[in-house]
Length: 129
Ligand code: SF4
Ligand code: SF4
Image (cartoon, rainbow, N blue to C red; front, side, top):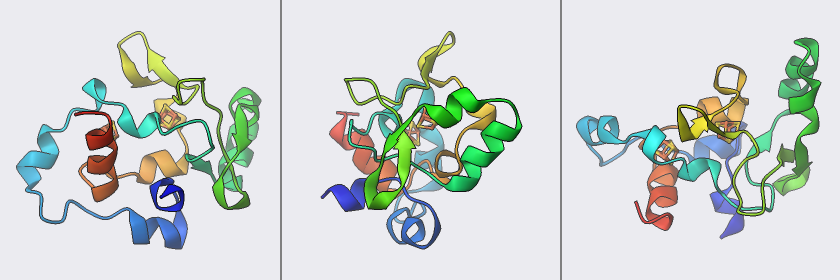
């Protein structure tokens, strides 16, 4: 269901993005984001949401290009723009096609997303990982 698969922040984020739960810590540590990237390829309909303060932050640091690479997102918010294949426009760097080009200054939603969470594992499963 689309609403439960969005990457959210704040209250709803805490509802849907949970910690590793029944999965062991070692299993979570085994998950390699650089061979995955599934959570950055969530589709073209604006699921990776951006809070307004991130837009302000990027503009203040002279990265209006990031603040402008957006599209309408779920719940009336804005989201990262995507390519036709559903990947975030910031996905893919020299080190890996699954690396984030703006990792150090990425969005709050991206920072808060928990590797090994239920949603992480769902994205991985959907991607055949
Ligand atoms: S889905 Fe999980 S393992 Fe894959 S890149 Fe995202 S956080 Fe990392
Ligand atoms: S900004 Fe980076 S971490 Fe966030 S969705 Fe895009 S590629 Fe992934």
